[in-house]
Image (cartoon, rainbow, N blue to C red):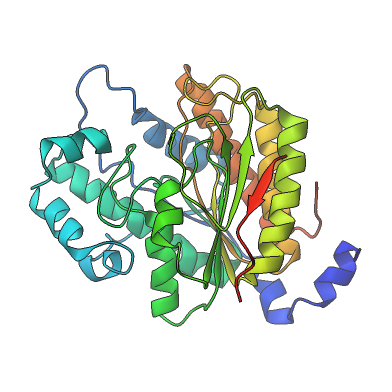
Length: 334
């Protein structure tokens, strides 16, 4: 196995320079989604996270442009995109989505998707970049689901390809729930590799087929999770031959998460982030991060986990180095 120094010699000087640049961070929390009293989606986490990121001085802060209709249509059915814009989703569609439609819901969804697009562009320039929201991986081409209106990862990957910035992308989904919408949208696309590590018995209860699915039993803790992720990450980077990674750093594998069913500690989640980011950095692979899910009983626990993700990206952006299941893989793509 090559050492970090040996691996670095295989990264072009231009790419190594990019991987030591300052982290750009995109936020959308001022586009507030109005929710009814008692709704379990933790909308307040976004503003609190942005405040702590700003206080820590972890990078340069930016408000993203909204995703356009044309960008969304690269991954979504145009009829669905138009109905979301027009506010004509029916009652069943809104129940599956988990959010009532409103103009504010539309604007926030467009900005959150735009933030991942912006983070991808920034990562290709700087090495790492962060969307303080995003990770809406349950959105399918023609419908939303599980608090996900548009699939920001699929849209952003396709936008990077359409702009001629990259040819191949790997999506590394570490939310506790399978990225079913991402897998479905990209099922027949050999240029975008999908890795999902998630609870086997958790939502969605009918799974889609990613390029690489890692199904974990209830109660999985730090050591078993990290071992499975290390194996899966190695396979994904080898098979994808990617030029860009999109990393969904969900907070919901946390032991205190109401919807998680896994038993990772905060330290274990920080080690997960280090493993993904250091492995990609050592391979010369730029990474756009999104925060994805988190439903801990205490809001501060969610924010703590997301903050450590951003801290890890900021710390690794200018440093050389690296770190340190049940795997079901689709046949390798050509």
